[in-house]
Image (cartoon, rainbow, N blue to C red; front, side, top):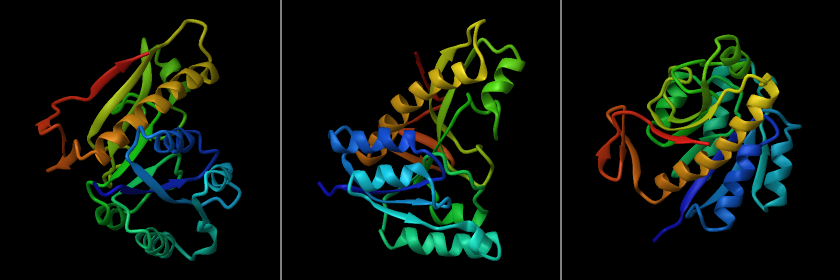
Length: 214
């Protein structure tokens, strides 16, 4: 069986990237990460990639006249590696519709909320302000709608009375490190696909996300 090829996009420390690297190295994900690309040249995640022997590429979006030019170069860079799957692991740039369409049904993202709640930023503080009982993370296929693609799996944690945004974020991050490699493995094993904007797992459509509680 041919090993799947992954390219990862990051902007920061790359903790989810590290979880995926670990899972490829221990055989939990039957794939290799061909490259890690960051729009932030100083992103700590690039060092994680280098330590793992993965090609690390900095593509500073500030050096391009507009988003279209940046995304054209980013797409060219990604396609050099002919990936089966593109993963967003803390990539903090909104991607245009043409870019997303080019990778339709083969791009995944992880977002720190129980989508469709709390799209965008500051999700933990917003969940606390709303007195939520549960919070968590969602893995979804990427569409042009911000954090709006079909959700595959959600990892949930109870919200505690003592929680701060930081303490809640730390527990959610543990779930992120658990569910993202799992979903990526499903895709690389051929078990997971997106068809007509519908998640299909093991040949059956998912009418709602799989829920995994802490």
